[in-house]
Image 1 (cartoon, rainbow, N blue to C red):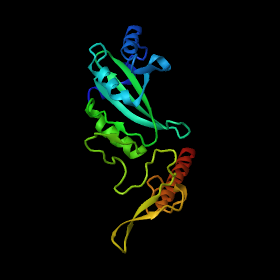
Image 2: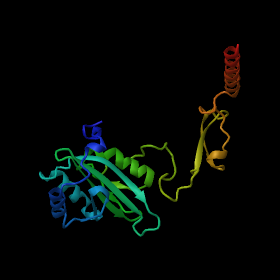
Image 3: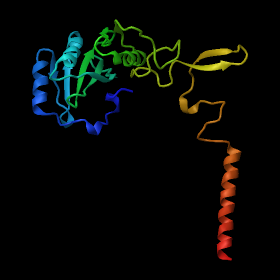
Length: 224
């Protein structure tokens, strides 16, 4: 965890200083558009072909110094022409300010990797690739991050089936991991192991009976 990641949100100035906002807007005038936001946070939209130049400017400018990429994620809007939005959250430790850059992209559009500007973008870009299927060019190691080898699809896309495509189980006969199509929804699956929140039912009933007996004895002792 970096120093920037340890900063509590309440310690960050949400009410951006007018001079700082004006400077950021001026510097990004030809590259990004200011977006109205809550609590005075700095939010800008930019085109994909200007994304890397915007990130470089925000990081290198001595009056801004957004040196830390604290988060990178995506949002899926199936009804839009540009279906996905990439969201970059930057932090200026020097000026105690945050800025958010939003970039809308089409389905299948290739995104330039931000790892050349912010090394910390490496794993978030892998996660976005894994969860949404958005491809980042020039990424040093664009592999799935959260799902298993051989996983089909991208779980955070709105068109991904709620139960997934396949489920994994261990085949005792074949003595190997086997994949099979999902047929039941999650809540009706028959698990062959003990759910941690259910516990051993015999022990649960014994515990409840013992508790009731103790209460009854306490009442008797109190009344005698």
